Amino acid sequence: MKNVLRKGLIVGGSVFLIAAFSIIGCGSDTASEIIEDANLNEIVGDENLSEVLNDAINSPKSILTHEVKDAIAHMYSEESLAYDVYSNIYKIQPINQLDQIALGSEQEHIEAVNKLAMKYDLNMTQYPDTDVSYSIEGIGDGHYPIEHIQELYDLLYDKGIQSERDALEVGCMVEVVDIVDLNEFIEKADESNASDVSKVFTSLRNGSYSHYWAFHKGLKDIGVTEGCCAVEPALGFDFCQPDYPQK
Image (cartoon, rainbow, N blue to C red):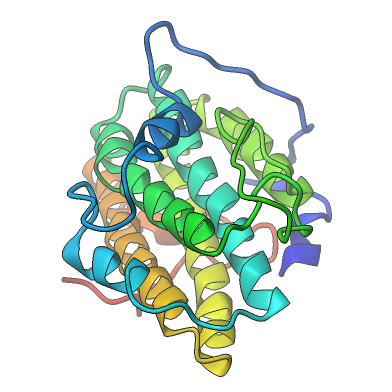
């Protein structure tokens, strides 16, 4: 799946040129700035995280394989991408779903993965070399150490600013990519008995299911009757996922 992302990036039948965007809103918080504040707290009893996430993070340490360490680093950048792309597109396409999901859920998702990185003293900035001391410096606001996540952010931002429909379609795309990766990483965590990592990733996946259906409804509300199923397959993904759980 990761190799697929490095191939030609095609959305809606058009090839998007990858460009570097730096979208910094005056007075706005980036994902990394939010996490810097979170780092001032002790891991135990962080009231900003749900009880399920806190319980998983504060459970005894697992013995992590290199694959699971890589998964944590990968998901830190990927959850940062979700927050950043929703927040930055919202500045041009002010759609409620983008703002509510970025501030309401993605912020918590980033914090949860960050807490795992802190727990295991993993470095998020030099993927896949995660075994040096913990750091998240420089990740966020459209900048990521993982090449295909950087490419994906540039692609999705370029698409999402075009129209309200494109912005909502980007939401469908982000959540499907998240769920595909989380399915893989949950399996790896389960195989190595890393129950704390598995529980955090499962909580993130449940959130992504809800976000997917929020974007699906948003598309239907503007007259796109097929919702996320109207998004053309791209990057090796089918964005029509009617079997995702709904609350």
